[in-house]
Image 1 (cartoon, rainbow, N blue to C red):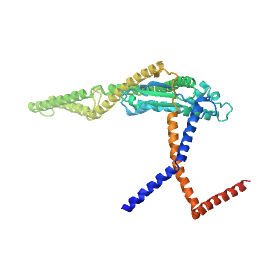
Image 2: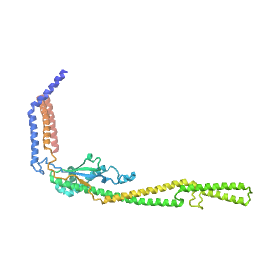
Image 3: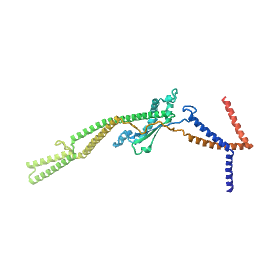
Image 4: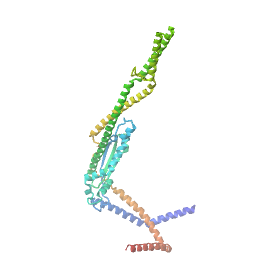
Length: 420
């Protein structure tokens, strides 16, 4: 255990000794790197932004905070309970729909081309004679323009808070183009929403035409049913049952009357009573079987339950078509109001001002990180230098190193010869 500690102590001492031995190299390399990066930043500050010697020009980033009413993307209200209608009219998370729609607008080439044309960016970016000017200009806009939304502020609110920004070396130009972008985005977003409202309106008009036909058909079917069977089948059934019971009672009375007369069957009075009994029985059978010569309401008792179910279905269909028609008419009127709405889609929360302070680069942080990186590199190079010195002092190791160098030179020679 003591031997291991001794070896570790020796190794640390060796490392420290190497650093001390090459401390001058480390300090000079680090100092040279610090002087280089500071001089580069001073040169960047002193030279014009469009100079090829300006590697790190100051970048300005004006921003625009915009409130967008996410309810605009909801194509129908929550009162539509039908899932089929809800899906057709675009019900869902309106906040997510708003953000998704805005992202699609911003990522679309139509929007980027509108910015290019509005701000004359081909000339601004020096792409007038470039055969790929459209693609290059779109890529530049992708790199310079940024859109973000604050999900924390959007939660619990029917609106989405957008933050738009544009980065450029010219702060006045960046501010001007951002203002134009806001106007173009508002116009494009409103056109899309207007087209959705018109699409919704067309759908509702077509649906109302179909519902009107179905509603009229259901009403006519109900009218025909009532004309044929009457409106209240339950009352008809009760009246028929009561009437049949009265006829049965009369038959029993007449049978008792015949028995109480004690007359032969051929007696005219008995014959008359027998005829009356026969007629009443015939009437009962005809009422039960559906003979309607006595009354239009004389519906067969056996058919009344099925007719009642049929009547309920027809009446329900009429009510459904009526409610659906009223709901669709309300939605159509709402769509007409949305189509005529001239309220602005975007609400600008802050004035878009020319930024007074640059957004990047952070020159102080850049100098510190660059210097620290070269400090670490100089330490690594110090160890490499120490190792090479040891190799040169050792004949066997020196031969190996020389062999590697010679081999590399041979490869370089053949490569050069082949290229000729």
